[in-house]
Image 1 (cartoon, protein in one colour):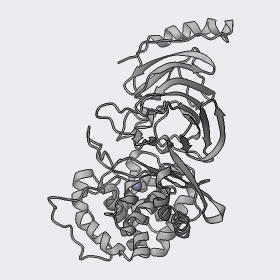
Image 2 (image 1 turned 60 degrees about the vertical axis):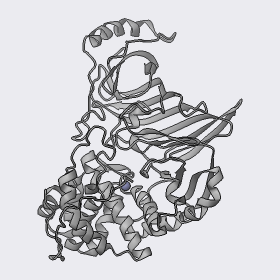
Image 3 (image 1 turned 30 degrees about the horizontal axis):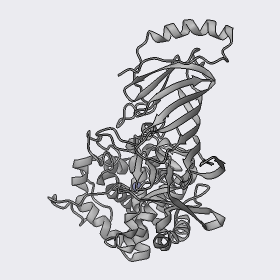
Image 4 (image 1 turned 180 degrees about the horizontal axis):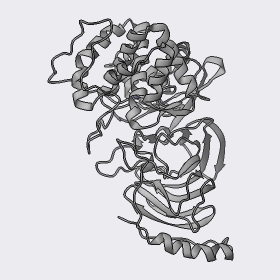
Length: 496
Ligand SMILES: [Zn+2]
């Protein structure tokens, strides 16, 4: 439903600007607002054409009640890549009070999950623009819509992957448009706020505090994290003096400490496999919430506290899940998928290092896990599509596109690749991939090209069969491996 058009006039308008702006406004008003996208096969309305965001400045004001909307201001600095009469932002949940473009009030309307902003003057190609949106950010989910704010027992956290950042703040909500972030949170006394990146100031005012964080590397909107809670921040040091900080419910810090103490060694282990940790800091956010998943939010991965306190989970399993999220900092965060069909590059690699860690540290053989995955792979492809062409998520389906085909099903592709090109070439490929695409986005075709270059042979046919085939190809070196008959009660795969 289109929202009523409103605008607020400030005293800063200059007469000549106003004269030309009026006619443009009338022209722009004649086109009905339409939701746009960047053409992602799985999420056609995510992202928007015509601009590239360079930075976000997000401000949230928390009341202390996690069922109440937060007052928010989102400022977007963007480079305009083609002349825009109106600018589409993704924003699907929350009330918009006003919008300004370059300091001048702009009109706005809602179309689907887009906020369509019409500046007084069209934005010329190659210019830069600053869009400021005053809005609310509502932690209460809309019926049937997952993601965005996670309500914890003591506050809030974020879980935006894949398509929910725009339920929290207006943005160009697609991983192909990474940007720098400054995040400010004002919360009442007794709360601690932490976000991606490093602290950039704490200011007390009356009975509240404003916490500011800034990223030093570009980030996809889906990886934004904002934690507000009755938390303690624990500091330790990783390899090369890397600052590691964890955010834990204050009452649980003693129980969680033995787990948190493992992070520096896990970072060192990952560095020994693929090279230097790509960001300015790392740490775990332990949320008192039942989400059913863990999430690799950039520099501060989100975990359910229960994963660490429920004795039903074996120690080796918990540690391998920690490594899964850690390895995403390289695979998925530093190197992000250009489209959501490239998701297997995130989850396949994270599952790979999760399994490799379990093999090296807990004697859980990779080969046995891969043989089991091989048995299930045809069924996974039938249910979710081949790894690099996953089926769209069904409405109301909680797992969405996060199915076994892109987890163990995609790790199986990496295993087949290692079998095919040999361990030394595979390890060179992994290092070259994260080094060459750091702070960027990359596609499946990029991975295929690099693999062929490094292996010194054309792997086109290999990848076509393994990534896009309806059936799992024969496993190199294991001609005896066979697809298993479908299981009636296949175990549920948790997204992470
Ligand atoms: Zn994952």
